[in-house]
Image (cartoon, rainbow, N blue to C red):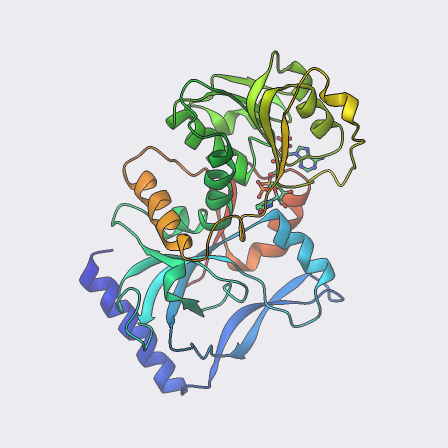
Length: 333
Ligand SMILES: NC(=O)c1ccc[n+]([C@@H]2O[C@H](COP(=O)([O-])OP(=O)(O)OC[C@H]3O[C@@H](n4cnc5c(N)ncnc54)[C@H](OP(=O)(O)O)[C@@H]3O)[C@@H](O)[C@H]2O)c1
């Protein structure tokens, strides 16, 4: 949308809020663990941004596997939502961050899946005109995880990199970022059907089981856990790194010093995207990711839905039925 129109849309959202009165109500996704569905869309109070937070009118958001699991364990009334894209309705009152009307992608702690969200001004990046809200919304958690796990193998030029769960949200972005950095990427997917999502994204090789991955790798991104993590250790180069960033299978892995006999001085690196790098780097890394989407070198694979579809899509995600990222649109009235 041209810049003037987005600014008008943001001002429209703000004036509708004023009509309803600050301290009024808006729609948001709310956790309902004992209910008919794991979450529902309900009226909640409008956010009250702090001085260093912008008020963002949310147009699209994405769902992460970890959040889907949280639906089951968090209390009734908890409000999920980390990955959002939209338009700044009101700039942070301390003057930091993008001005009202700017299209942005943001990382929030929680409570982002709502008509409006309060977002720290350093946790957002302005969107180039050719990056859609849906593409942008797929980036924060998955893109930051892909980018930052790969940094454990930098520089990647010419290195062999093995990526498990490559058809998933983090995996498909990691394949692209690694290939763009000059790595020779082996992507592990669950089936030939799942491999289709990686068409044209730069993987040197796609295998349907980690057991088919031949030779040694200097960097391995591993989030399936269990037998997959054991197989990853069997394939790491001496002094190489296995970045362990998830356990999608829920299985554990036996670990023993002797496993490293043929992989001497290899490292197992635990990874948490949120604390892996300083807080002030979120904005710069989000800007990097959107710039790569804008120049065509990062192509998020997304499936788009209305936000009322979250319960059904969440179940499909947990059952390994979503390739790439599920993105949801919030209707703009
Ligand atoms: N540490 C962090 O900071 C961080 C950040 C983001 C995500 N994570 C974690 O990283 C993992 C990947 O996240 P994501 O958003 O990419 O999830 P996702 O979109 O669901 O992708 C996970 C992929 O793993 C593959 N997989 C292999 N074995 C699996 C199993 N036994 N059960 C389920 N999936 C299996 C699936 O692909 P196939 O069916 O094709 O094999 C699936 O596409 C999750 O465990 C998530 O919780 C951690």
